[in-house]
Figure 1 (cartoon, rainbow, N blue to C red):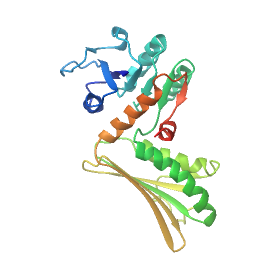
Figure 2 (figure 1 turned 135 degrees about the vertical axis):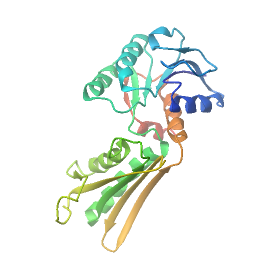
Figure 3 (figure 1 turned 90 degrees about the horizontal axis):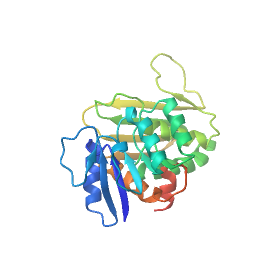
Figure 4 (figure 1 turned 30 degrees about the horizontal axis):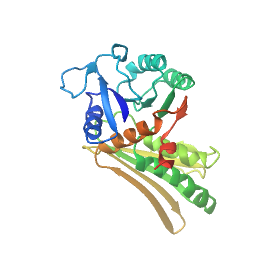
Length: 253
């Protein structure tokens, strides 16, 4: 039985994860951490990790960047691995995450979906074949109207995955409206669409002479991110210190 502490248990993702784990035989949330205590849970909830003395195997974090510094500090003290799903961390915090991974196991990914992370792997393979053949690359991402960052972290992760296969020689182009010229050969176009309640859509276009190959991923609910974080927790429990990512989880599927 893998015992989980859910950090950010009363947020939207925390509630989804709680529901999914409640139906799993070999996983259990033994405690939750959340400053908001207005939800009744089947496990004890504490306002901070330092107040929780319950033993666990791993922490799943879907919380707030403001809480990450204290989370890292307490996790190191207790030698607890962290599946770190909170986004929007500062450069200083990212450096602290890397430093903390020297003492505990931390898994961090731009997107927790198993499908997206499989797609990142496939994009590298496609790039190695299609770019030498003269294909251009464009990425279009769509999200709900309340999303404030653009482009999405997932779109950037896709661009980075492609660029890694190209020895990071390509630049990213976010807007073409201010210039009138043909696209550069070594660029990846990235465009963002915002509207309605779109959970998340990503389209990667490889456009060549007389043919187009498109990779698409559509998220219909937040459950895909919850399921990915749960698989990551199962993978990370008992791992030695180090910085892990979802590509390693994919390999174990």
